[in-house]
Image 1 (tube, rainbow, N blue to C red):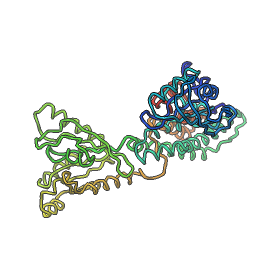
Image 2: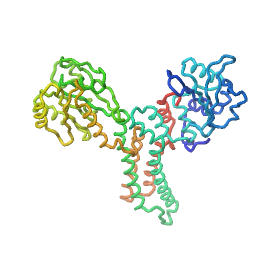
Image 3: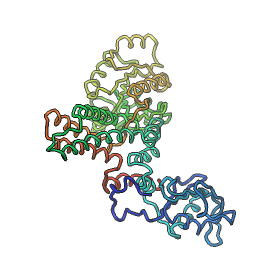
Image 4: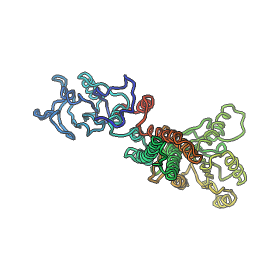
Length: 481
C-alpha cells in the first residue's frame, strides 16, 4: 500500500528493508506466554514452512485476515511448541503488510528456537521500531502518532497514558493538520496572485489572512507552552525535600515510598547526595528528591551535597521545607524566606512541613500555626514522618497543585522535544508573516515565511522529514514494536 508520507521520507540504503519479511519478539521474556510478530511480503510462505495446523486441510495463504489457527511449530519431526497463529492481511494490520503473530509459551528456549526457525526460513530480525516505521511508511499513522506508540509503551501513570492515547488517536495530528491546511490555502491564493501580477487581482483577503495567522500563532504557542507540563507528566513531577540536617527529610522520603530508601541517623549530615525515587499518586508520577541538609559546614563532601541540593531546588516543581515542631517560628520563617528568594519560576510552590508533631503538645502546633508566615501560594502542614501522621494531607495537597495546572484536562498536551522545537519555529515564522503584513512587504516574502511555517508543521507529522530524524526517532523504540 503506497503511503501518502513515503515520498517525503528518505532512509539510508541499509535501513530500507521494506522488501524483507521481519520478525521479533513483541513481548518481554519471562512471562507464561509470548507473542512473536512477523511482517512482510513473504510472511505466509515462511510461516507455512514451520507451522503445521491441527487441521491439516487448512492452508494459511487461503485464509482471510483476522483468523486464529491452532497448531504446532516443528523443525522436521521435532515438536518445538503448540501455538496459536493470528493472521492479518494487508492493508488491515499494524504495519499495513501481511502479518502473523505467533502466541507461544514464554520459555526462553521456545522463543529462541522459533525466532531461529523464522530466520532460517527467510525472515530477517527486526530492528528497533521497525514494525512501527513500516506502519508510518505505509500510511497507517503519521510520525507524531508513531512517536506516541513509544510513549504509550513507556507510560507508567494514568496521565502519561492518557496523553499517549490521545496522540495515537490523532488528537495532536488533527490540530496540526487544521493549522497546515488553512495556511496552505492562503499561501496558494497569494501565489496565484503573483501569477496574475500585472492584472492587479486579489484572491486572498489580507485581513482574513492576518486573522488566520494570529489564530495559528496562538494555537502554536499554546501547544508549545504545554510542553513544560507534558514533560513533567511524562518524567514525573520533581519534588525537592529540603531543610536543616536531622529535620526528618530522609524519614519522610522513606514514609512516602514505604521502603527504607534513605539512611536515617541521628548524626547530622548523613545524607551527602541527592536520593531520588518515584511514586504514583492518583494516576500521576511524583519524583521525590531527598537532599543534603542545608547548613554551614567545612566537610568537603557535605559541601558538594549542599551544592547539589540547591541545584535540585532549581529543577523542582514543588519544594518541601521540612522543619521540626521543636523549632522556633522565627527560624522556620528565616529558612522559608531564604528558599523563596532562591525560587525564580513563578510556578514553583513551597510547602512548609513542620515534622515530629507526635512528640509535642497541641499547644505548640497551635502557636506555630499562628506565627509561621506564608506567601499567597505557600502551604503549611503539620506531620510526623516517623508515625505517618499527615502524609495523606500532603498527598492531597500535591494532587491539588497539579490539578490546577490542567493535568487532568482533556486538551492536547505535547511531551516531545522535537514537536516543541518545531512549534517554536512555526511561531517565529508566523511572527514574521504578521510583521510583513503590517509593513506591507512584498507578497513573495510573506509567502516564504508562510511556507516556512508549513514546513515545520509537516516535520511534526512526517509529511516532510529526513533520514536523520527518522533514524533518531525509531532507534529509541524497543525491538518488536
